[in-house]
Image (tube, rainbow, N blue to C red):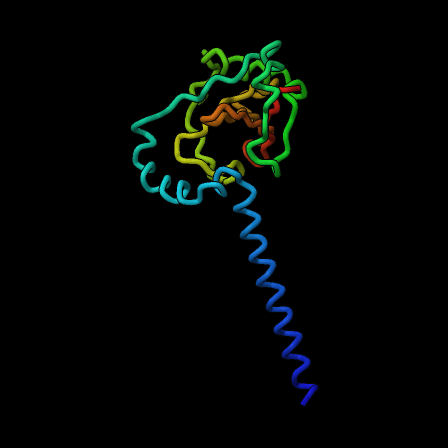
Length: 178
């Protein structure tokens, strides 16, 4: 009789371990996005109610802080990453073309590509979940490329900025303090 209970106990323990792992992954995904975790109802209600209004009400991104002295001013000193789990990169460590793009964003243009400033839909879900129209994308010129290349800066409606060198496969949040 004890021989029959042992396999059942092993199967039950394994099943519990798998369920615990799935629960952890689901919880970890939600907690990785402070905005979504803080207001799950906002994310749930934002999708359907804003889906049709994204094209009707395009919003411009808030300008980023200009390069130079303003990057080390008091507001930048209070910089807090929007997603502590996401890697960040110092503005000074970005390629010069990315800094040029950030400067153009701060000035409001003109941009070298017609697609610059369009809504970034975050289909890959690599950035914190926000309502439609929250993010905007900008091309970072790639020397030697005969098209837009793969490098982008994406801005959020609250002023946050993200760098992607690989066409949205990965993102780093741009830290303007350094």
